[in-house]
Length: 466
Image (cartoon, rainbow, N blue to C red; front, side):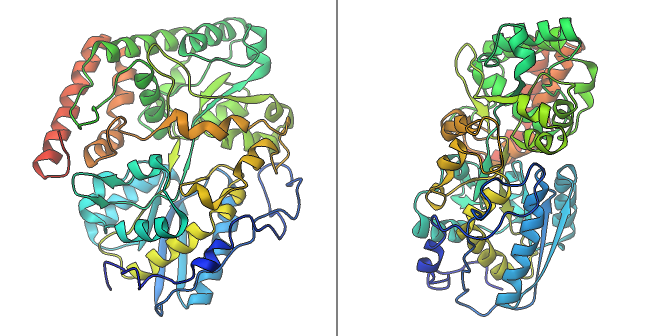
């Protein structure tokens, strides 16, 4: 099976794919929240016909989406495609926590799924996956410029390879309970990390309800750690991929997190998994979390009063910047052991052509990596198709790309960054200091040793600059 598809080998159905632009038809399917109010406005799907004859089977491993409507739609969507092109498709949805373990096991064994999706960096698997440059180039030829955030999350400038294909992403705004924050003088929620410390501490003091910034070895805690570091002007690496974590700014960020934990949080944040902050917010046990919109979507179906009370804020401002980590990044990889790489790549182009449907059926959770394909997105943000009150509750997401950054910012999401993320170096750094096990300065110095070693190992293999 060829590892590279030529431009001529890709489908010549740009005109068909262009039909995805703005075409609306059909009915809304099941949702975690209320039935879509604009019934009849689900985007029409387009079929992209492969230029080559496909056959055999295609196995896909992907996370169980936090918005269940998406998986109901996706399973039907991929089955329809497989039936039309003559490929027997199998999709295995598993908990996002289990994806890295499963992927590592399959890659080590040299057998398993043909196509794997994850929501966090997979750059550490670059030596074991196919280069996706051909797919990215073809998608860009058809649909214009890829969102820079997605490009930087899937491209290694040192090897000039796309180790992953990144057609979508989800921002990570602040999710807050407006009624709680009104009581402490912040009717629009916190705008800065200092606001968060003051307001959340007062909410906890008066109501016993903590805020929920994770300090455990999991995805959301990793995202929050980076957002806080960046706001103080600190980072793991600089734009030239040199390790710069050991700085006064990083120490100040760790000291701030210690104050936030002591004043506004509880011990449970040290053992959270990715769904924990969602669950806490939905249950009324958190005043503020850093997350996507999925917790709110769930609350809209399980407790409308809580759903209506959840509002969103852009990236919190710190002493140097206001920046959030992408909450989710779609990382599609084709392992070298894949038995049907051609079908995997063709499916990804078909999936990309249908990004309007992806965004809609994820209830605006998954945003497009090729923005030109979803021109109706801002209209959805201004008038939510799924019954938000007020209807424009998500309008702040229209500018989300401007206050969101890739993991590894200001450098690329290289393999060293992928390993730092997957081994949870940063949330461990924050957590050790918060618990008083070491000083903030020592926690940062220890993290530097770990990160330095990871970078040296990957640099010796020619996969990291600096």
